[in-house]
Amino acid sequence: MKNAPAIWNHVDANAPRMAALADAVWAVPETCYGEHRSVKLHREALDELGFRVTQGVAGIPTSVIGEAGEGGPVIAILGEFDALPGLSQEDGIAEHRPVEAGGNGHGCGHNLLGAGALLAASAIKDWLAQTGTPGRVRYYGCPAEEGGGAKAFMVKAGLFDDVDIAISWHPESLTDVMGGGSLANTRIDFDFHGRASHAAAAPHLGRSALDAVELMSVGVNYLREHMPSDARVHYAVIDSGGIAPNVVQAFAKVRYSVRAPTLRAMSVLLERVKKVAEGAALMTETRVEPMVISAVSDLVANTPLIEAMQAELARLGPAEFDEADRRFAEEIRATLSDEDKADAYARFGVATPDERPLCDFLPTAGGTKPSILGSTDVADVSWVVPLVQIYGATAAIGTPLHSWQMVAQGKAPAAKKGMAHAAKVMAATAVAALLDPSLIERARADLARRVGEQGYESPIPDGTEPPIAIMAA
Ligand SMILES: [Zn+2]
Image (cartoon, rainbow, N blue to C red):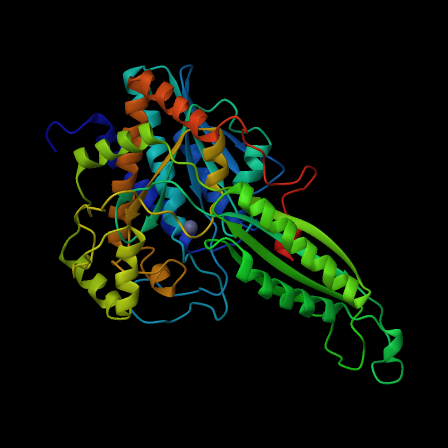
């Protein structure tokens, strides 16, 4: 490409190596704090590229940080590499066929997320070296985005204290710069302790922990009528107290996820859910012990960075795909419902969906960008560092996240093109900030205004360790 900014060329030069990394991570799908092979692959790539590497930060063995450059501002590029349980799937086919029954799979595209972020970081590293610009780029290899909230622990450990701006992305089926908003979320276990007894011979001597779990569900389901409309509460019974109906269950454990659009609203709702648990314990004469597993905040947008990234996306234009990419995307789309396809556009605030199989265009959303009605641990970084992210089109339009279709497309040529496209936008946004210190100043001022006087308080209670053993169990 003539007159292409140097940073795009640096991305192109590093793209094959990072495509290989994405494929290698896809092939070893590991979940929540168990990403030992995936982090090793990232570490090897960082070493090979000449980053200064630290593995195992914030007490998390599957985290890795690589830094390059000298002096100047610090640009953080956030990557992930965790997979999801139950989503094992062969690649390159448009039918549901697990590689391993019940196995893991990269249903959220994090094999691309990590490699694409490292692609941007490596391009920035090369650009810094080539131009002699003062500045540092730091790749954060963050595990356990799905359910473990590693970044919130990394923020609490102070690992972002000297960062000037942070940039990331997420694979999707459409391309767009992300706005703000996501749900703050606390995962919390309630352990109920009762008293075992013979359920027929001495029922009056037993105190059922399972009854307490059930009554807590009833209470929480009544609570739903009286909570903020965008709040979410869901639960999974982790331990129902055994398989013998003739033994009164002495122990039971239920895991709740409590979400709300703001950290404050989430904290208020969490306290109410805790009261319901206490009520259930009171009714059953059991004892309840709540224990927070992980917690994340809501995402804070940053207008100056969104505008800067938007300008870089406009300069680059949409991702480009070829006929073979489109053919495979059509096959995948044949497995999706009309609702899936319409929802893909709705998530981006686009009113008029069309029939194109891949996002080789820039969708025009009307008005403000919609919030994510899910949660992400990127949010905690956004409270302490000005942060911006882009959705990169790596899959057929309408592909739901956390689906076998997402896994099936995770190694496709189109996915690599979408990944490199997102990396160019991320790297170019970093270069814009390195060349114009006033952008960083404006981004910081915007963050200070949004965070307000209350400041940021980690949603993770003091003394809570990353739930590595709990999640691995
Ligand atoms: Zn994800």
